[in-house]
Structure formats: C-alpha cells, structure tokens
Image (cartoon, rainbow, N blue to C red):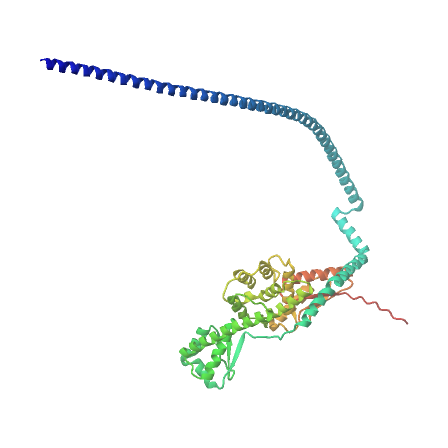
Length: 515
C-alpha cells in the first residue's frame, strides 16, 4: 500500500515537473516568437518608412513635372490664341479688301455692259448705214453687190495681171532653184551610182515541143493527162494550131514557173501520165521553194541586212517570181534599197539599215496577193508587224504609195522617192498596149475638156502632155491656172507610174507686110 502511495506521489511529482518544464519551454517559445515578431515589425516599419519616403519623393517629382507640363501647355495655348487672333485679324482685313474689290468689279462690270450696249448700238447704226450705202451704190451702178464684186475683181485681175504673172514666175523660179536643183543633184548622183539590169516577164510561158507526137501525149486519152496537169498545177495549158509549142497561162507566177519546169521535165522524159505528172510537179515545187529561199538570202546579203527572221527572208524570196508592169519585184525592191541608202547618205541620215529595210519591204505584200485578202499595202503592214519590225518602218510601208494620210518623216519620203526612181527609170517597166493607149487617151481627154484648149498631145509614153490653147481666149494668167487645175485632175482621176508633166502653151503671133 505504501509503495502504491509512493508511486502515485512520484507520478504526480513527475507530472507536475513535466507540466512545469513544458510551461517553461512554451513560455520561452512565446518569448522568442514575440521577439521575432517585434524584429519583423520593426523591419516592416523601417521599410514602410522608406517606401513612404520614396512615395512622397515620387509624388513630389510628379507634381513638379505636372506643374512644368501645365505651364508649357498654358504657354502653347497662349501662343495659339495669339496666332488665331492674328490670323483672324488678317482674314478680316482680306475680307474687307475682297469686299472692296468686289464692289470695284461690279462697277467695272456695269461700265463694260454699258459700253457693250453702246458698241452694239453703234454697230447697228453702222450696219444700217452700210445697207443704205450699198442700196444707194446698187441704185447708182444699177448692179447687184455680187456682180459688182465680180466686175471689180476682174478689173483688178486685168490691171495687175502682169504683176501677178511676174510674182508667180518669181516664186516658181526661186522654189526650183532652192529645191529642184538639190533634189536633182541627189537623185542624179544616186541613179548614176546604181544601175541594175531590167528583168521583164509575161503572164504566159511557152514550152517548146520536139514534135507534134508529144503534144498528143500531153493531152492524153480523152484529155486525161492535160486535165490532171491543170488540176494539180493550177494553170491552164493552151494547145492550139501553133506547131511544137504549148502555152502555160495563169495569174500566179509561182505556179507558172512550177508548171513550166514540170512540163519541160515531162517532155524530156516522155513518160506522161497522171501519177508521173503529180510526182514531177512536187519536185518542181520543192525546187522553186529552194530557189525562193536562196533569192531572199541573196537579196538580204546584197543589202547587208543580216539578222532577219528566216521566215521573213522566205517571203522576200517569193518576190523573185512576182512582176509589176513587167518589172521583177525583188530586183525592183533591192534596187530601191540601194537608191534609198544613197539618198539617205546624201541627206546625212545615220541609220542606213532601217532605210534599206523599209525600201526592200515596201512591196513585200505583193508576195501574198494571190493567197490573202487585202491590198498589198495592207499585207506589207501586216507582215512588218508580224515580224516585229520597228514602228517607223511600219509607217513607211503604210504611206509608201501615198496612203494612210501621206508621208510625214524623212524615212517615209526616202522610201517613196526610191520606189519612184526605180519604177520610173526608162525601160524599168512596161505596160500592155491596151492600157498604154488608154492612158494616153485619158490624158488628152482631160486636157481637151477645158475651154480654150485647141489641141492636146500626150508624149513621152504618157509622162508629159502638151496643151495648145487659143491665145485670144486664154491669157497668160489663165494658162498658169489651167496647168495647175489639169495636173490636179490627173492626180485625182488617173493611176500611172512616175510623174506626168503638164505643159500649157500659149503662142501669139503678129504679122505685118512692108510694101
């Protein structure tokens, strides 16, 4: 029992000591926590104080900057108000000045209107006086106004006829001295430096036959061979009573050449049948195409025009088998290229390549006349555009025969001049007798249609017409007018190569006999 009591007391004492020790430790922890809290609080207060000071400094600085900004804004506003005030004053001054000017303009307008009315009134009075005077003059002269004018002009023309004629002759003489002399010099030198052979061709070819037997083979059984030949070649074969000759007729010169070459080979070979005809025509066509290519290359090489499109060179070569008034078009075009280059050199032009190319291409449309629609001028322009030739050349081709508004650049005039020189050279071209006679007759008909013409003669192959007038009906001034009018009518109504010179001749003879 005693041990239990002692154990209980010991337990109680232990519990009391444990509680006391625990309380002591807890108090110590609390004390430490309070000290830490005080330290933290102190630091917090220090930081708050520092932050407060910084915030006060920032606020103070912001207040200072705001004050400066406000002062600046106030100053700018004052300046702006002063500027607006000054501008308002200037606007008011201008407004006042405008009002004054408007008042002045209104006064001037009223004055002008008043003067206008006065002028109109005076004009009406003048017109009225003029009408009265004209009526009085008509009454005195007993002639209408228009008739009086005609009589006055006729009298003036009669009185000053000699002076007018002298003036016309002086102007013509001066123009010839300054223009014709230089033109003749340039053209003569160009013609002298270049002269080419003249090639003339017909619209038909004749093929000689060794005997009449071969003629029967050409015709074939029931005309089978000749029909096959005409159908395949596109030409007509004329076999008449002329011995040992077959005539090839056709408008397309290339087809005529192909047909001639094939027919000559058939005659030489002796085997004439439809299959053989087609074979030889094909060979002849290939041969002609090769010749056209070579002809184009030779023409381009002769003029020194390298770098052209091969297809364009082939088209140029086709001109070898085209003719104009009997003149070979390719030879004419090459000749025009040489002449154009010489003319351009005489005139000081630098780009001779463009001049040569324009002259060479001026008739290029004739290579396609039988296959495409349009005139050869339109076709020439289209070909030039297709192969991207320079625009000046395109324009020169358009106006080369005085179309599309006429020439306007030195290249245009040189191309036309070279074409005319080559075409008008004696012997270069020829015409059929029928068209030649018709042209002469038309020239004489135009001349004799004028009053006072006694006789008219077309001479020099239609390049000149001489007109004899009746001296008692046509004076010198009227003769000069007649020459100009006839020349204009010929230009308007006729088509001809080169130029036509119009000569009006008035001759007065006075005779007396001394006895």
